[in-house]
Length: 323
Image 1 (tube, rainbow, N blue to C red):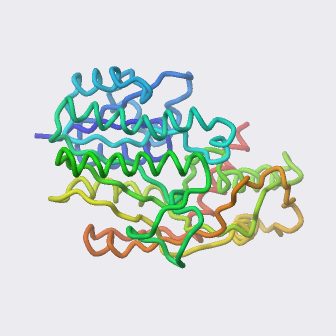
Image 2 (cartoon, rainbow, N blue to C red; image 1 turned 45 degrees about the vertical axis):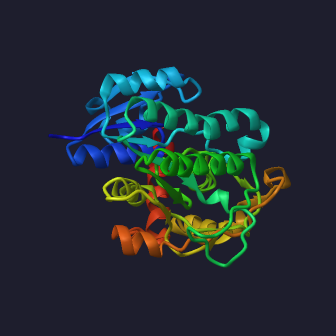
């Protein structure tokens, strides 16, 4: 019989790519959706999967609504991807971030435990938990030192997942995902901000691109690759935590050079460093070590940044041209 999966945050970037993957594996797919806007399904529509998903109303801030969703679909697997996921916003709305990104994960865990503790559970952890890094490469044993309310909330959700795994013997795993991007990324995130800006500048809609710390280094991969690792975690006999990353770090500056260069422009002619976009506490460098995922899950990233950024630029050129 086909498995059933419930995804929170199904309307986001990762939710869309994971939906596509699970539908290709013939899952019955259910999305827990907090209905806030009319165009929330645009990513799912863009991947051509919106009509193949069942939707149930629910919100991570309301544990009873999560429980109702679970009772309605009785999933074999739950993927908790929902969060207030923009780091900059977490300073402006720290309590909301804690409520949704942190306590929301605990609500999901408790709802699953009450419904059926044998349901397999995936928690979307984040490289932002490492923050002020203590070593050159970050793996599953690297201490956490978050540098934003978002990172702090993710640490809470991460350890809540570990606690439920150890306390209730639940098959609950954390995927510590480093930065992963795609043409479906929100325009508020720096990679999409850059590729959208490149498209607008190339097409004469914009004259400059204002950014913060362009010397910050990140380990960037493709969301379409990373969601496969999520699925693989829940297929293992035993739950565990895994760093998912490419193992390559690149500065925002070099990412800009790549994006502008794709359309024959020099980034130095258009990028303006604006202190307004600097974080109160910066994370200067993140570089993941995905050895454990490679050895135990058989997972390797297939898409390089040199392929990903041009893909995103082309998608934004097409979007801006349609406007």
